[in-house]
Amino acid sequence: MGRKLTIDYHPGPLLAIETSCDETSVAVLAGRTVLSNVVSSQAQLHAKWGGVVPEAAARAHVETIIPALREALQESGAGLSHIQALAVTNRPGLVGALSVGMTAAKALAFARDLPWIAIHHLEGHILSSLAQTPSNDFDVVFPHVAIVVSGGHTELVLVEAPMNYRIVAETLDDAAGEAFDKTARLLGLGYPGGEALQELGRLGDPHRYRMPKMLQNDPEHFSFSGLKTAVLRLVEKEGAELRKHDLAASVQEAIVQTLVDKSLMAAETLQVRALSLVGGVAANERLREVLKAECSRRDMALYTPEPALCTDNAAMIGIAGGIRLAAGERSSMDIDVIATAPLPENI
Ligand code: KG4
Ligand code: ZN
Image 1 (tube, rainbow, N blue to C red):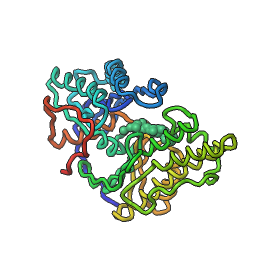
Image 2: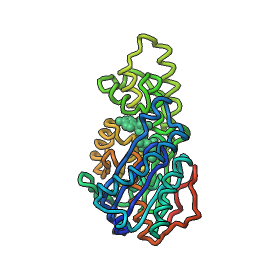
Image 3: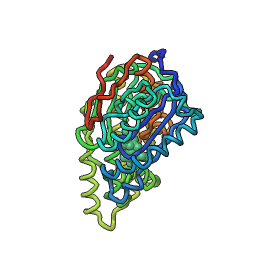
C-alpha cells in the first residue's frame, strides 16, 4: 500500500506567501500544522475582462499583501516577532504578481535576518495533501500520484517522497480548468466558469451530446483544446434547440472521464496504490465522486484536501518551504522571480 515516511519540517512559526496569479495568500504554520491560511481572491476583479489581466493582478496584490499579512498573523496568534522562517512562491507565474510576494518576503527576511526559501508553485500543490488542519489530516503514503488540476496546470506527478518528483503526464494545450472555463464562456456563464458549469449540468444528461475523444490511448498527455471547438460547433448548430444543461453535463463528464482514466492508468503502470487530487478543479464534485468510487473499487488510497488547500494558497507553499528549510536549503537575496520554470531537480 506504500510507505509512511518520517518527514522533517521546520518547527516554525513559518510565514508563507503566495502571489503567483490572482490570489493573494499568506499563511502561518508550525511544522505541518496550518495555524492560519488567509486567501484573498481577485476573481471578481478579473471577471469583467473574462480572464486574469497581469497588470491588474500585480496592482491588486500590492493593495492586499499587507492586510493579508496582518490578518494571517492575527489569526495564527503569532506576532511578527515570533516568526522564525519564511517561504514564498518565486516561480512559475505572472512576474509582476510574483514580484509582490517576493519583495514582501525579502523585506521581512532582511529586516529580521530570517532564513527563507523560494518555492516552485507546482511543488506547493503537489505537497498540499500534507498540510494539517482540523478537517484535513491525511496519513499520506509514498509513493503516490498527485493529480494536479487547476486553471494553469494539468499534471500527473509521481511523488516518491517530498522533493522527489517525476511528471508522468501533462497537457499539450489547455489546462483542465481552462477547458471548464472556456466552454463555460461559450455558454455565457462568466469567469471562472468551472463551478457554474457544474451547477448548470447538475440536472443535465451527461450522455446527450457526444464529445470528442481526448488522446484516449496516450497515457502521457492530455489535450482539451478539441472540446471548445466541439462545443462551439454544437452551440452554432443547435441554436435555440441547444439543451444547455445537457451540454454542461456532457462536457463535465468528458473532462472527468479523461482525468480519471489517465490517473488510474498512471497508477497502474507505476504500480502505485495511492492518489492525491489537488488544484482548483479538485473542487469538482463529479470528479471527486468518480475518482473516489474507482479508488475504493481498487482498494487504493485517495487524498482529497479541503478546497481551501486545493485552490492557490500559501499554506501549501509553507509545507514545501518547511520541508526544504528543514533539509538545510536556504535562498539568497540575489534570486529573482521566474515566469516559467521546471519542477526542482530530485534530491
Ligand atoms: O487552483 P485554482 O484556484 O487557480 C489556478 O491556479 O488556476 O484553479 C482555478 C480553476 C478555474 O479554472 C476554475 O474554473 C476551476 O479551477 N474550478 C472548477 C470548480 N471550481 C473551480 N472546475 C470545475 N468544477 C468546479 N467545481
Ligand atoms: Zn495553482
